Image (cartoon, rainbow, N blue to C red; front, side):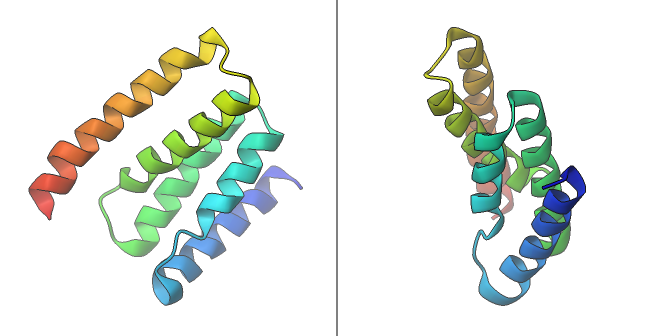
Length: 109
């Protein structure tokens, strides 16, 4: 599939997931994309899909992006057999997830 088709699918799944089902329908698409592409493309796709989901659902921008980045980083770490070059990426994403969980989610909800 081309890059635009993945982004269109993510956008429509974000609309369906937030408007009708209240499910993370974009997450399987992100996992598939992370398996079939490299770190840079998968991270950019996960971040963009998170922004789409946040725009459609009305959440703070970046909240879903952090979750999707963690999911794609975990898939990439498993795919690359936990190579040392990807461990700092996972550590940074875990740090941002902790910041999100402690401050943003705890403060605003």
